[in-house]
Image (cartoon, rainbow, N blue to C red):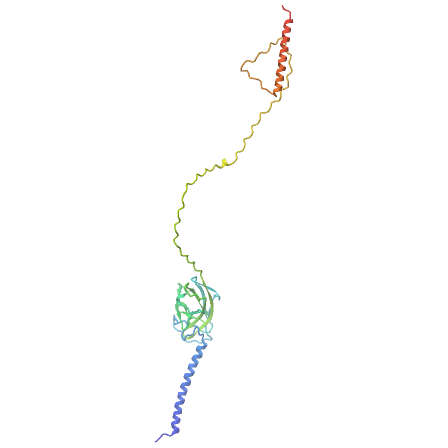
Length: 327
């Protein structure tokens, strides 16, 4: 007995309806996933956790009701700083806060490093995090785009983040001197992650990359040709330097003081010769002569006058003797 045609169409219609429901459900799932992917930041969302596997340091807490989500921001780190390639590292403070009304377990902080002009190489960057034992290196990994992410570790994770509290982390970033020249700016973004919750993306800062002055390369040197020795001539004898005292013109010796002229003696008046005086005799040899004073003419006059007087005196003496009566 044949099955009625209406019944076969009814069965076929039920099968088609089931297939339509499955197709519609699959399409809805795909569209929902695509919309969610498009709504996420394409630079940091690659279908996996940004920070990699979260470092669990404590047992997961039972599910608690949170009013909102935790957040991550820069802490005491201004925008627009400068990082010198090959120079000192720059510190970047990060704070994860929780004001959702319930605690979180194993909250990690991560950095997202991006070069607007091209990809980054992990060997060109160095990231460290401060711990109680000092600075510890932080691993880097590529996502599905040119962005480099720091790998979560116990040093970058807080075991429990209570409500109304903040967990602060201190990173520092350095750039190698061998980094490409097109790395003129480095964008640093923030990402926070907790198991069982979606990653939270914070703000980003741009750090300008400076280059140290490269030392100038020395110019190639060529061996200098030996200079021909110049013919040597006997050096002329140099005059001995005169002492400084000789170069100074000697002062003329002071003129000897001229002997003071004795006052001219007044012309002697002929003294009266006593009758009993004898004629003057020549002074014996060796008797010092009287000092001559005055001019030569005056001396001649005196000498003549003295001779005349002596002659007169002698004549008078002879006359007196002749006139005396002889006894």
